Length: 390
Length: 138
Image (tube, rainbow over all chains, first blue to last red; front, top):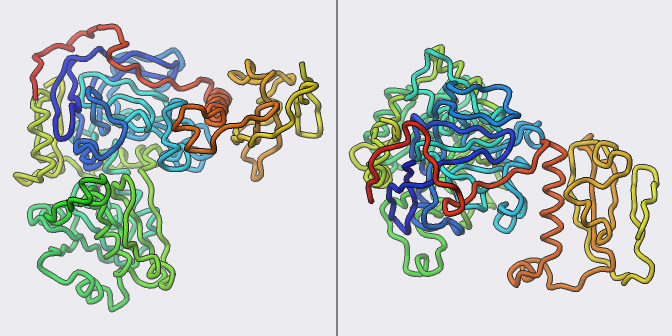
């Protein structure tokens, strides 16, 4: 089959690779119909994540139809149209039972866990280095889905592929930011980042009753899209004093909930220093500028939720402000299994629309060009979506 | 051969006579099943069973209804480099035991031990219907 493979720093190629195979009884094979790019892929593409090897297949946000099921799969049959959660989780361990699926004890094959990096093993993810589970990515014609009964969800008939694909990752990530950020009716909510996750966080905050939602970014087309599709107010951070503006729009209190949904920060165009490049640390991807701003802007006793992609260390974190303002700081990779059924229901009722986020669609053969467009945020690109079977 | 001693909820395998009594650190996982489910009829769970002569084992209920805490450590102790240093030089029995414990937990909680995808170089070349099309270099 064809697959979009990482070949080296900023190098991708479509290669012929062996088809995936069932490896466990709870596995199934999915024929991929849609597979979206995600900001979390960019550190991989740039070679900033240890463990990725040439030939590894990228992609984790996808939808398709079931092509083959293992003998222990009960909820799905060949031909079902399913969206698959980007997080690989068993559904049985204590963490999954608490709804913390990305913390799953059993979501990675033994021997592949990222214990050295995080101190504990965490749930798996497709299209990442073997240290996050050992599962090939979805930018391919077919992909293996472990724990299929737990991670794959039948898509209701009225929901299009272009809408449902975002139930795999961006929509649950957005919902998580609002729900675990503890948005309540009447709240003022600020969201840093007007990409897919930021826009879906804004929609979720509105759905949870926020009185005012303010989205912050520097790309005018993304801000216009956020206004049009989420009803949020917007701030261009290069044109205004964001903390002052947020104080003014929240009665001087500061937002009740601040969500960082930048994904991978582009550093505002600031290149990485020579030292950053030499050490592989810091630089634009690990600059917590938006988190710092969120901490300072948030009202006393409020919540800051970090949804963005951080792969290592950050410096100059305002821990003093967190403590002295009594903030709650939360974060997670998305626990999609917890929210995807509800999100698909909302999509079916037309309460959650996401297809506008797929600003660019490409065949898999155009994968390298599609990623370049997404990485550079060129041509108004919010998400590139690949259609491996046309 | 050692033997199992039942002590309340705890099962302990005695050290072999004459074994080195230096103690290694206990490696522990919490498994979301009862001790009876984890060790049915006192039998050691797979894939720990092959290590029955090499490690001692303790069980106790985990607090908060989280199941059972399963602890093992090498009989006779081990003398290795600590933590990451052991891992880096490739002589890390503690890391190996943690890996075995994770497999025990997966088997007990999900019924299988999750296997990673095999690298493409190790998989048979096969093609499904419709899996065709040109290959385009980047």
